[in-house]
Length: 98
View 1 (cartoon, rainbow, N blue to C red):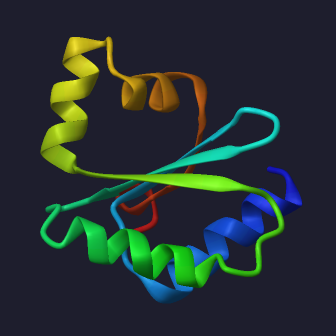
View 2 (view 1 turned 180 degrees about the vertical axis):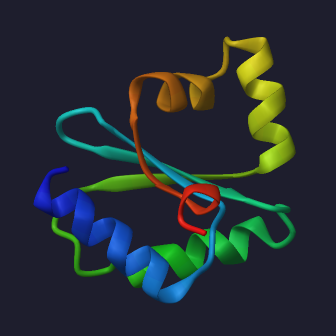
């Protein structure tokens, strides 16, 4: 895993407790999909993650979804988030860390 990816993962996990973190490197921008057990206050979660990553020198965008939405999007197979999940890197999966 690239060093900058590891740094992003560490910064996020130092501040929040997501279920999964996906990353899709599209060259000039990184797309992060953060999966939670629920998406209550998703705007606040995105702001919190942006603050955690404020010193990252690579442009990025964040998508916040729930584990149920992730399952639904995977079944549909056509969404933008599904593309990130299928073609991106799974940086973190809480179920594999226990």
